Image: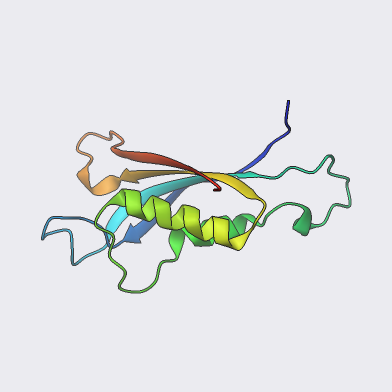
Length: 122
């Protein structure tokens, strides 16, 4: 059985330019984004293991919250893909990325409506 290390950043509320309808395309929509990153796992973490032995959580948070200005995503699936690709490019130890996105603006009774995308390094 193979060891794994999964780093998680959940429930980030992020305004993102996304949507297909005219009322959606000019203003950012609030999205709740959660990201799990499966990272190569060393055989052991000693008490003195430096941050470079894992991955900085802030890198994951930035990938999920910072987008090029003016970039519009038609689908939230494309937002998830952008986040996953950013994380793969940042760190060759990333084996897979799971991104869950909830569209907060369309919930009427507190329900969660959205997607989960899982990408594996190819």
